[in-house]
Image: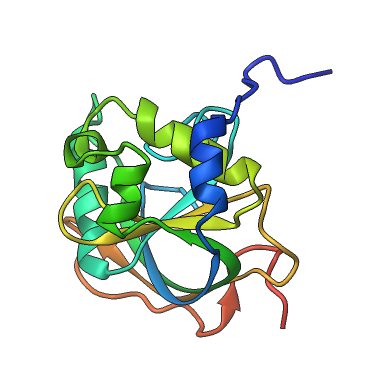
Length: 195
């Protein structure tokens, strides 16, 4: 039986034509992820966020520690109730084969994404780009952060290849919890890691 929460996303042909002309790049490097209490660092957002429409599961990471903290603190500030438990900042090593780099302002202009739309609370325009990119088979996208001058990596859960790696290098508590907690280096954070 189909999931009643699922939404059929319809890619935009104009956006698809623009994205088809942008070469996918490989990505290999360190990323950071802010998590709420009890949330694993590789949990996919299925309800829709800035760059993924509802029903297009995506994982969000930041390219710098500072960007991850800014994104996480913004999210924490939106919560209607005080957060119980400890938030964490995770450092991971990730490798992807085909990533769409949307950090170039010229490409964003061609897609019709202004700076105001990139930072807006209305995510419609960005979701349309993300959903269309996922439909074209991209593993993910490098995108500007709405929280400053940094960038984020959006990973499309359904498109990642068998060679995808996400290895947790370290984690630390965020907020009122002092100290740094290091995980075992090279420890895989999900079942998709391959040696």
